[in-house]
Image (cartoon, rainbow, N blue to C red; front, side, top):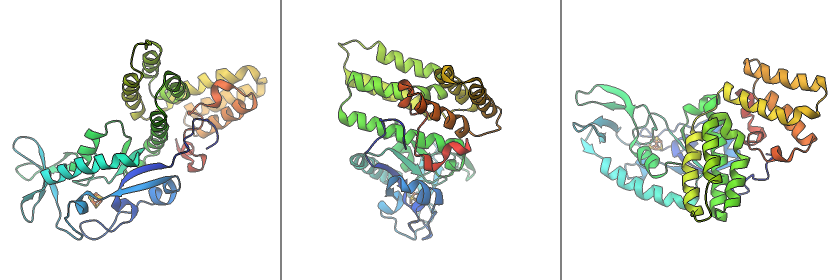
Length: 325
Ligand code: SF4
């Protein structure tokens, strides 16, 4: 990744459902290796594998377990063959395991879809009549989302969608930069630099949210605790970043960025840039086309305010994520 000087030098660590790495930990002794995660993203991250069902002692192979809706509306994790209710055991284990994961400084987490333990959404839950509805969250995943609300979390199934994949990977690199800032110790200057570097990443998702975060930092008085401001900022940043930007949001940012370089362009180059943004907006070329042109001009004209823009260099170029959105 060549671009922002804010690029993290620490290794990026992601939690992951072990079966996605090819570990044979599923109930039937099999795995669900995901080639994108192991063969592509794996070159840029260190995985921290967790199999909640094995780690609570269910063994491999093991009888199947599932979610069942109790009379009080809660979802219980149950082993139908024995009738055992594993919910409390899984929740206690999850609370302890997730706290222990903190020492790994995770930048994100990839969960296995549809699993009654690991699934993040739309997991099958049987109602008291045995009718299934896809409205559950795996018991381990629910604790992860509760205890680490700002951590970027995705399911491997959703990562097959180019837009969601690009968003998740932008988020994990942004989260890692945030972790670096927290470790260095939040100061007003570091918060402002972080916000400035992510300005257009935020704008592409939610312009009002980007401004709100800017005001939060701008209006902070000297008497306010920087640490408290940082916590509020992190929550707001997470909210804005959760949403993958659409073509309209990207086009708006591309036009803003073009405004910085267009004065230095001759008429041919200016119309080429305008045309490429228009073609992206119309869905005729991927985002990488106008972004590559903008990167080139930002370097050529040495535009300081854009040299550190994460929007132009959000993740390693070799992942080619901007070629598919
Ligand atoms: S989905 Fe979760 S619990 Fe099931 S095998 Fe994979 S890691 Fe283990």
